[in-house]
Length: 297
Image (tube, rainbow, N blue to C red):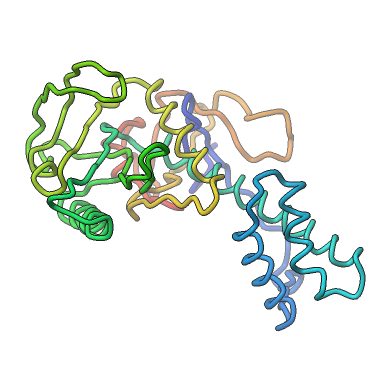
């Protein structure tokens, strides 16, 4: 027995397949909610209040938002219910973003953690970000790079820099990687780093760290996930990073169910499971096989 067009992702340790489920609900039974103009305006006001509220804790932040939107409701109970509803929505959205990011990071291959820093002689803050985004755009379209990263300010100097994980295909490195020995002001000692000649010339400094162990990727994943919860935190990523690979799943490739929930359609796969594209055998799961499969987000 086989399951057609299952979605497969990695949780960092195993490949997990989401088996297709029969759609028992008729189209006529599906309900679509249409928001009124008033509801849309109130939601926009909540979003603005949420962005401007200085507190980080849910309780304090809810109180600050309530003070802003309370005048739009007939009584305090209605206002509190509204704020609670949308705070829960925010929490669900963050959880979904975390889950999606985790699956994207673990399902795809990465080989470098990169930091870009600009030199004042070459760039202003604005031209650095614009130039870095332009470089990333062309690196993806011309050299098939993949990246997930963030522009962030140093907590001590407030200086803008870029951190990101990259997949750079073999033979597609723009510029050359060279070892550079210099003084690290943070640790107050000499160090040897891997830097890129093209990016150094273009921006000022680049630091490349090879991702050779899952432990480093796990630490980077923790950092990126944590950033999603920051005020205004927003990651940038290339569009060629799938969340899932689509393949048929053979019964003999299923190791066990995922979790204890009987309604959960997920199963754990053996490490050498077979992959299929439109019913045609592609090979056992590996980097080359994944490139031949359909993708989904």
